[in-house]
Length: 335
Image (cartoon, rainbow, N blue to C red):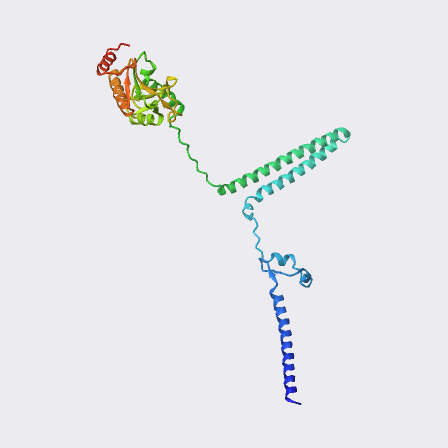
């Protein structure tokens, strides 16, 4: 044997052992994989493939529920409700009643043997009376058991606290509306009961070489807020004794539009334009001079802010002399 043949034999033996080792390792891995492939459910019970289930013992019902905890209602506390005394009394009563019924029945049977019809009638009547009496006894027993049950469960009922409802002491909006009506009528009394007016007109200055000058609604609202006028009765703006709208009405204001003198629409004042304004004092007035002076002062300031002029009822500029004349008329006015 040469050296080359010896080497080839060694190589062949090595290959043979290597192949045998690979086969053994493959079989071992397959067995391990099969063992790991078993799934378990949430209770730890293995999930076995369908084709292998026949080799596993089927669990019985006791094995299934042995590991589970069963919670059932406990009714032991009701045993104290049912007493033996009513039952014994009922048994004694039934026994006495049965003996009495048997004796009566025998006596009636001996007396009524000659009349079968009467005997049958009495038998039916006795049976009906016995059933009624037995039913009453059964109802009494049920009533006693129910009363005992109620008395035994009284301590289980929760204590319900009662709360007294508060008495409604707030004012009613409807009543407030009616109660405030006389106040509003007294506040706006000079306007409601007016017999005469002193009017002052405010018109913007006009220029020949310029478009007509108008009063924008937004500018007017700014002046209304500035001088304390309030929107109120008859859709007009009014100046009251106090700037917050309290006190008696002093004077009122309306707008001049393309259709003439008209009250204001509160929803469109900001978007409208006005050709002028009219301020007027209603007469008679309990504080006529104070109201007139306030109207003239505010009219002058508004005209100055609007670059406008103050005119009388004849559309003539108001002079100091005419202003004094109007004041004297207000002072001497007799309504």
